[in-house]
Image (cartoon, rainbow, N blue to C red):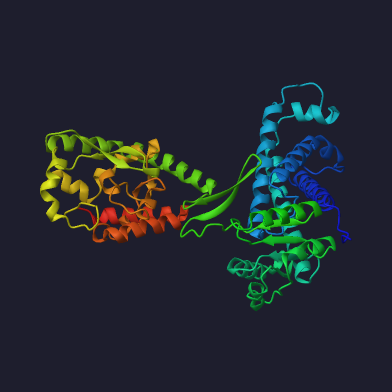
Amino acid sequence: MFVSKPKKWVMPSVLALLDTACIVGAYTTAIHWSIPLTDFILPDFKANFPYLIVVVLVWYGAALERHLWSPTRRQDVIHYLSAVTKAVGNACVFCVFVMVLFTRSKVDGGMPPEEQGAFDLFVHGGLDHKFLVIFCGATLVYLLVFRLIVRLSIRELRNLGINNHRVMLVGANDRTVHLIEALQMQVGLGYTLAGVLDNDAERGGMVEATGVPYQGDIASLKERVLQGEVDEVYISLPVRSRYEEIQEIAHLCEGAGVSAHLVADLFPMRVATSRLMHLEDIPLLNLSTIPEAHGKVFMKRAIDIVGSSLLILLLSPMLLLLAILVKLDSKGPVFFAQERTGQNQRRFKMMKFRSMVVNAEEKQAELLEQNEMDGPVFKIKDDPRITRLGRFIRKYSLDEFPQLFNVWRGEMSLVGPRPPIPAEVEQYTWSQRRRLSIKPGMTGLWQVSGRNEVGFEEWVELDLEYIDSWSIGLDFLILLKTFRAVVAGRGAS
């Protein structure tokens, strides 16, 4: 027989009801703080009632979209509160949009507000900005505090052994040991590890050092599920050789209403991380070596657009002056457009102020023996191809400023690995090509870590380190260090 469990709709219904109470409390607070107090607050409460209805309805939609009423046993508190904050933000933004769309200024000079109906006042009464700001702010604070109290309370109950889930692990191997250690570290999840099932008793014994007992063959799982001994099943069997057995276990758990989880570290990747994605109703396992934080990536692109636009505008007089000086200094075009390799090995024309003689690329073959860089990169300190003005603008990186247009067009970023020429990429190893997995930048860790004094291998390692540890804060730090290095004229040739 199955052990009786609470209906699945009970907890979401309670949360929805208490969420509504929080929003009503925020609504009342906004009335008290934004509308002059009267002897009787009911007219003000009724007059602004449409605001409350809109926020509650939009909050319900946002909460459902972000699964805030679903069980969140495996979601940490920080991500949970972040989801609540984003949902409140979505609700408030949509609420303001609705108010602006359906509310007009006070143009009707006839009937006084107290004699109008609630909806008439909503449509004709105009926006009360102070009320809206306080209402949205109080809603965020009340919901965050309430949800935090709920999460911490549930966590304490689980620590006391209340509302725990009994977990059975199927398959005994190194992945199982790693999984057990991870589950044991997360006490607040409320998991009781009932045991490990495996057809090989010797393999089953290897996990007993973790304190989780070996419970016998996998065939006994059906009886344990039917007797109500199991709430969740974690499967760590090898997929290739045990596919049919895994399928049978999944069908068994599905029929009994028991959650089943397949350990998804299917491939021993050296660098790539795995993430679960969904395309419509199709689950996908994503293996990627680049950041998947779409919000941060969007912010990085926004910073690139705003930053490059402002710099182009502010530096336009200097750019014009440099263009004139380059033209006067030596024969040839003002700009040097060189084919470079960008993100995902797409090629583009990188712009620079010309700092060398016009036939510099043809003369490079004559200077190969003087190359001072290891690997496929060519660079010499006293390059005879550099013009008089070119030596100055290269020292202070003034020749790089036209790349702001590459950033603005989206071919480059302000910060990232430097874009190599295609001939260099052909000599890369497969691991070195990973530096092409993100947009190249005008500056990067290489430039602020010694530039020409850094060898090629260390250069690549710095680029890969940047990819693996990238953040918006790191970009700002690199930009600051780049400014100091450029002003000092360090490391350029």
